[in-house]
Amino acid sequence: MLKPILLVEDNPHDLELTLVALERSQLANDVVVLRDGAEALDYLQRSGPFAGRLDGNPAVMLLDLKLPKVDGLEVLKTVREDPELRSIPVVMLTSSREEPDLKRAYELGVNAYVVKPVEFKDFVAAISDLGIFWAVLNEPPPGSLRLARRRGGSASDDDT
Image (cartoon, rainbow, N blue to C red; front, side, top):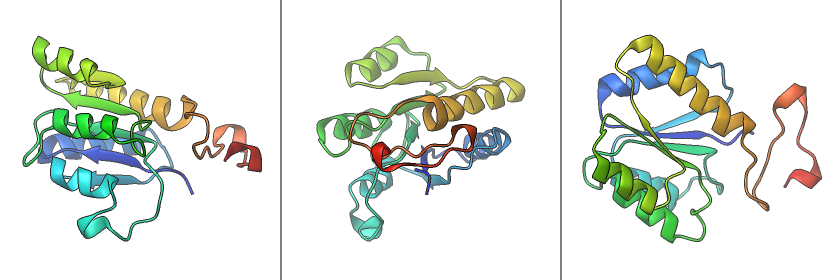
């Protein structure tokens, strides 16, 4: 089973565009959609409505900056402070070009900060590239579950 892509986005338009873009990239990973920062933390920490979800972290978290309940920077901060979660690649996917937001995200340990392109074609290309990089090309940290996807390979015992 492939690790899911976690998408935390509250804007219905951006959510729809992101899902279309991920679908067009033809990734086999499931996409888990969450609508606010509190829900994202519940999912990641396996609490509340997600208390029964299976162990394991997502392949990548695409995280909006401005979220209801708990903003993206606070989610990022919590993830980086938790030993069980800190190795999750986090991509801040936002419309904010504000330097303080960018600076704070990197101070908190974001892996990438991507400003959402305005043009649909550019947005689809950006999301596709992100998905392929983090879900397929990126090598996870030692000790984390790695499932071979390239060249039709299968996971071996050495990959866990």
